[in-house]
Length: 379
Image: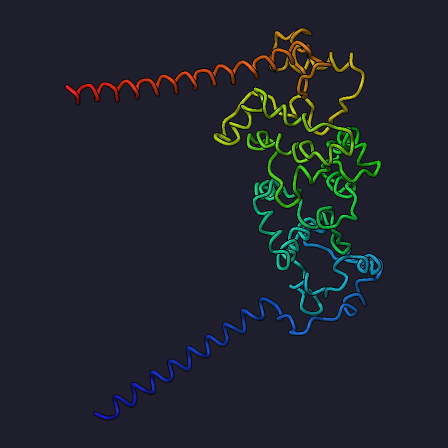
């Protein structure tokens, strides 16, 4: 009777030991498959560069493509990450030999290591998740920009003027031109681009309109409706416009006219609903914006053509009836100024008259009612 419980306990212990042995073997097998764990102390950069500064060092990928893995130590020293350890970015490399990375092309390597950037730059990584570049890449376009395309790999540099005032607008524009070369050529010949290339620090460059990490699809209705506010960042800035002898009325009068008022209303209430009301880019262009101080006869001809895009029956008289982006004054539009002044006086006067009339009538009605009650009380 006593032997059976003892035998049962022995069987349980044996089964437990067998399970533990299987678990240990499985763990060792997984560790072996994944490769050696990174050491707790990173490998010194000197050790990495001892090999990777050799000329002609390359890696043959599974597809047969040859990938250069030679690193220029001078380029690395000039990077903003010069003080980092190699393994902080190449965290999946623990020792030598490294083994073949799970990539087929150089592009795969850039995309693969863009995840390393997110380990430190979490805010920027979260911002770019919903960007147009990330959306296009998720749709299968591998050429869509990742970190290294804009900032470099071993020669990493910032490109934004907002945090680094010493950086010129040309840096970000030329960075974007690596992919968007056709657009860059149009921009370079525009009033903004010419000023930017001459060293003007105030004109907008690519990332002022298309923020680097949060760039949205410019083909959407929301982007179109937001574009006047985007232009207003500069053209409603009185201090900046005064610096170049430009008037902020350009923006103010647009917002207050029929086109601008409607666009702003759509933007606030139904941003996903299309409107055919003109925004800044419909008349001035997008990347090829030209100066408004050129040949007046050419400008008038172009203005008629621009109006006809929405108003097919428009003639020169139609275009001439527009006063431009400026408030009418006696010297430029005396009749319109006179009519405007007349209504500015007439409308308040009429409204004021009726307010006084209603107040007097109300006072008289209250007086008559009180008088009527007094007579009823006396009777």
